[in-house]
Length: 326
Image 1 (cartoon, one colour):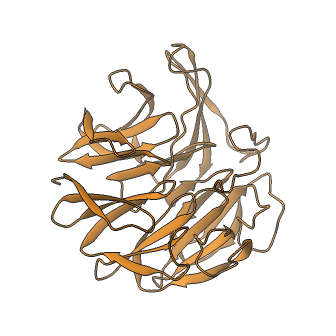
Image 2 (image 1 turned 180 degrees about the horizontal axis):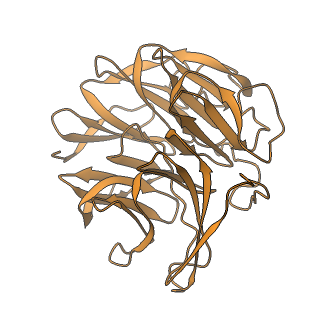
């Protein structure tokens, strides 16, 4: 069975955002609506279905499926990957995007501290903690198009672009959501989406989202989830259908990641825990000494403290694929 699909994926248009702020339009020489996914616990790893990126010794490595990672870009501090496009934040605070050839990159935005991206656009956090939504028109191949940047919020420390629902966390721990709610993605009981961001949780440290579901990490180290849960990415909370309110999955966590139908968490002792499709709905320990993890369709990648990069499918054991120095 395929993974759950967000309603109106890739075609959803949000008619109303933060109306009191202006829209800034930058016309540049290339154009594509980039799609990547912030499904990782670390800026050094990214996954989207069967496409992956990792940062090793300041260089970005890219691969698909079981292929060998290949270096594509240098001076990289964060990566992101989507169905057809890849992203890299370089040391000069620029977000680059490319499709099949990293030698033909497009600079999307400058002055960026970190970013999140997915099927409904890109969210970028600048050095002043302001959050911006970045959209493009056209295609990378066309050489023409627009970059549209819309201010979203201030004092933001984390953001996630899901499959039809976007989220951000403010510095005081408030979690806001906008987009689809039919699978319970807001976690506040509603099933109808809103036209503007609304607060849906408090005490949040981080947020990750994917195909109709989201998991958050709160300031007590608890992993909570909401949304679609046919295959168990939310553990036993709403298992078999959906959860419409945030529910506890795991305690003692420091980092989180989620894919199309499974999720992972790193605990304080650097043990990595996994649950979801082809796994038990109850989290199990799968790898030790982990400092970062990302999740795709049914595959996860993880980086351990000794610089080894691991990859495995759900239900299988991690295998060593690459030596990745810091």
